[in-house]
Image (tube, rainbow, N blue to C red; front, side, top):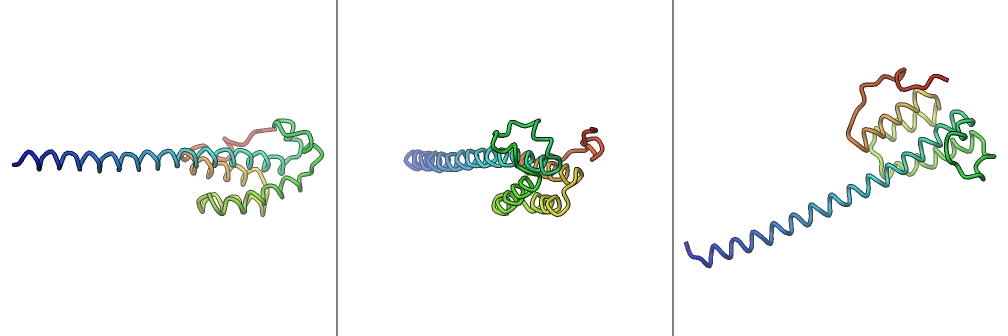
Length: 137
């Protein structure tokens, strides 16, 4: 085998390898950024859902003072707004569970939405039951 062929092959392989590595690194960075954005949106959505269930839950969250006069209806409307946004960035199972919550806001549907968000963000399903996850007042 000719040394020129070997050197050329190694050089071309190195360039291709560097391009693939660069592409994979960029894809990983984009996925990480998207996951952080989704996590923040999901956190805010869960807070609004909690306040839609019970307006007194506002005291557990650091919500701006101008929100303190808002009603449960205000919070369910916020959830509806997030619902329309989730159509862009959330998988089908999150959208379905969020729709169920909007149509019938209750603690069970809240937990189901949270579980589906967890699966979306981390790919982990929980073995905990609804009863194990619900807080007893």
